[in-house]
Amino acid sequence: GDSVTQMEGPVTLSEEAFLTINCTYTATGYPSLFWYVQYPGEGLQLLLKATKADDKGSNKGFEATYRKETTSFHLEKGSVQVSDSAVYFCALSDLGGADGLTFGKGTHLIIQP
Amino acid sequence: KAGVTQTPRYLIKTRGQQVTLSCSPISGHRSVSWYQQTPGQGLQFLFEYFSETQRNKGNFPGRFSGRQFSNSRSEMNVSTLELGDSALYLCASSPGTPSYEQYFGPGTRLTVT
Image 1 (tube, rainbow over the protein chains, first blue to last red):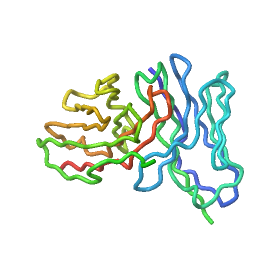
Image 2: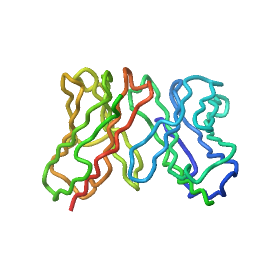
Image 3: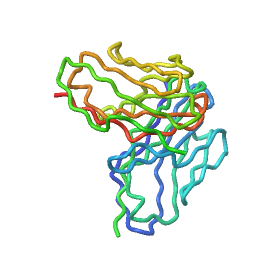
């Protein structure tokens, strides 16, 4: 079945550092890919998405490019802030969403001032 | 637009009892999905409703059920609660098919004692 793999962390960075969170996937069809963010005590917020190969999703300084050849969707940000501290989930939707969203385990990001 | 709302936010139940959780989607959204989030298993898809019909279902026992009303509001029910059912239950709404991005509520934290 479908699966998403991402580093779980915690990942600790200093403010203004460059961020990369790796995400790779296995899917039957041609999935849509998403990054969600979860702040403590809250639900998930959609951060960005890409629906086909070579699409780049971007939002709030975060970017991710849908790479079909490497089955990857790595999240990047050029300069992180303390307010970016959260748990980040990579997810995919395949087969028209027949199995809902498939999530990675989540990456806990800690940004130190 | 108001976001996805879930009630109650917190719930404590005893083993063997049953529980009903409620979700109101974003206005105009017709698809509602439910997910279970636990530290061990992460985020897992329970089921999805569209126009009052269960369209997709994850790999959960029959003790987990749901329904959707004509106004798109949804409820999920868990019967004969087990300790392992303690989790954050998240509801997500979407305009159409689940392959569109999903918007999550804050969740209901269920504790089974």
